[in-house]
Length: 589
Picture 1 (cartoon, one colour):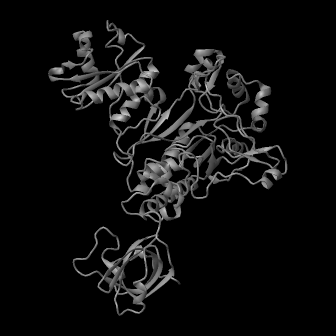
Picture 2 (picture 1 turned 90 degrees about the vertical axis):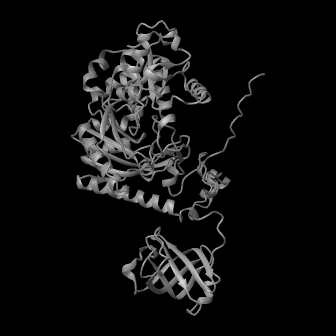
Picture 3 (picture 1 turned 60 degrees about the vertical axis):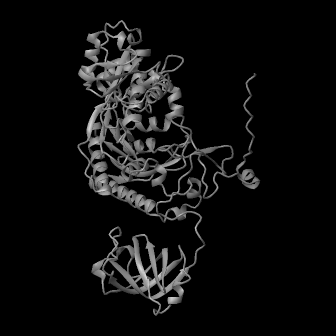
């Protein structure tokens, strides 16, 4: 074999053994004829010592960083005082008996590992070099652990892994599709799947009552720190179950994967309704690692004469120990609240004995001031922030300020999973007064709201809940799922509420509805975004740091140059012609 051991695997137990290792030269140090090489491979780094008398010692004087080498030699303990406690191999070194250059290397255009950070575009342009560093090596190996554990848990529960198609018909729901022209049928197009949703439901009809897949999905949405054009999705579906069954399996898989990938056992997985999440945290993906919960102050100011608080809702948060914050910072918070949609932001400093220091304190009665301090549990030195207005706006603004003020780095504060349940079935009304689905139209309504769905209209329908559920980790939405509609009468009821006629439904979803005519079992499912999950576990704020070959924020790939134009011959073969977009008209001055 070319090597007997990986460089990073050598330990004191190997002392006295003759080994062969291969790898890249991380550093080279020449100490008066004795050359020290740090040789790096996928398992780590080991120090190699080349004495002037060793065979091939002259080779050591010409190697440079990133040369690929093979070393034969004896493993020996490092001399006293030279042990490197920061390296797993730091107690030993390899005394070279033979050194061979397998491949020379030019000076790399980006630093390999270490503390120096390269420009992002350069990192993606030379991603194959970036991948050699400790950070990406660690992140991608940890991600592999996550995938392995997810598969193991599914196999243990009798799930079957099934691959679904990548070339499908374009669906009229969700985000924009990526489309692929058909050469054999000019003028027709495939779409790349945004998810395996309909196919996994068809698998339930087909009798595969427990399906899973780590599926590649694609959506033509603007890339963000937690979103790429293409992403991996841990996708499951189960028959003859309810949402509780699905959440139990997903909880086991996610918690087990988190523990094995990080060595940290997450705490108990909590549960909260969507309504409570919005009221207490101002978001449907609450970060439970810290407090600053939103408090409803409606009762405190029910009879207030202060006009700014005569609003549908008054909400507040307490920021412990921040009462001494500078006025410039308070002005910045006010501006931030306005940018988020609030009419303004009221701040109050809490002094001794609960006295309030604020430009609006004089407009509040003594009872209101005391009630405010009591409701927020405030004490001396605290800062209080209040927003009044429409409830949804007050929640959103304070929920965002809560994160701005206190959210810890993603790798601090432990792993806090929470299930968010009972999402609304509809998220609003369109211009014609029809409800807009908050999920795909196959989501089962909450059993307690079926009468509302049957008789409600307009705003009344917005109170209807769904049997859907999200899994959130440290403020990141990992994934969503729901119980699916499997009865034709219930499906048509939802379609009718959405203004979808039976004829429209057949055109848009006919292949699924036709399958349901032949006996569809009750079924439910879920999907976890593997990229997001791996990023949180790795302590990364951007999923690009757990993706081997990511796109930039603009959707470009500096490594391959994609996207690129097609040459005329390809366009002709596909029956395509590129038409320049008309420029947007400039507004008249």
